[in-house]
Image (cartoon, rainbow, N blue to C red):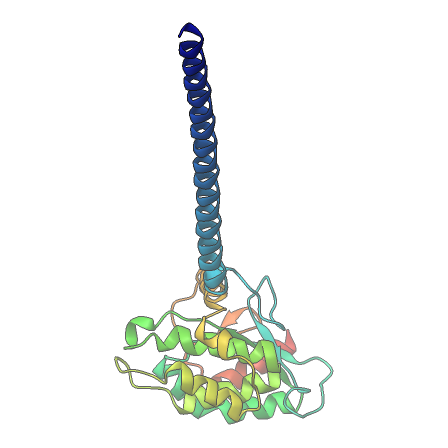
Length: 254
């Protein structure tokens, strides 16, 4: 009987060891499973954050449009862009404007053809400095959206296409405190002047940060309102065609 009890005790001990071994194995499997799940969750969370960051990149990163000067935030419209012949020493006319500005539209209607003719003759270049500060006068942030769209056109199509788009935007300028063209129409207008492939640029407002910097630059130089016309470093007050011509003549003599 003693032998039998010993055998039973030995079997019981063996079974206990096997249960412990099985329990340890199960715990290891569970631990590994938890680790795998945690790692997977971290990976998914990381991907989600990265995706969100990627989605916001275009609207938060400072991107300079092609053709623009990084110090002045402007670009030149020259005789070559206008289909004319470059002059020997054209006078630079610096023009700061906002596409939502009604006075800018009036300025364009009254002096646009006059300035275009001087550019084509090679007598002047226009240093365009588009800015956006009149979203407060729009029901759908047309000021910044139109300016951004214009920069998308400049970047993709060049200065000549920008000028066409510039003129088209002014012809369709909304009244203050009303809604201007939505992004779909801005995209369609770009196609009208021959520029395609900028849908994302317009919808994501890629050049929003650039426009903020352009406004900062203008304000640092004494900006008070649009249109702001400067010739030979001097403001042209009440910039009619006559006033601009006199300033150009004076600049040629200096």
